[in-house]
Image (cartoon, rainbow, N blue to C red; front, side, top):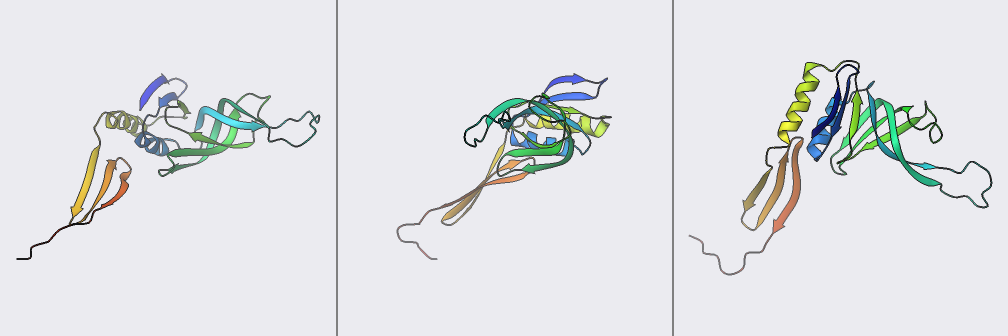
Length: 174
């Protein structure tokens, strides 16, 4: 993770998550009540009433800020989802006060604004930055004709599955 921008007076830190571990750290940093801003895509419907048949609208990508109500980290899909009420965004495309879910993704910057950044929050960001520099460890457990593999991550072991091989030939028993 990298710090892109920091404004201590307004309580804003812009972070750039680069790994799944970074998203996991963000899931612990972002709390209900925080203002989180990121790029998002939303389907905009044609409201002019001149359409001949129903269409699904046009996808638009823009910057939006929500007041977080809940946050969920999904390690298997690699997504961090923040749900909340829209407070910032282009008023011609979104209605302020409605609900939206931001998908915080890898390699997309995220602005977090808090009333007060505690020492614990700053320590957590420093740990995330330091952890991204540490090489990952591959764990392989071998027994007779099969092996299991996984990578050690900050949030636990990311399991990659077994390798099963038949042992051919004669085996000697002593």
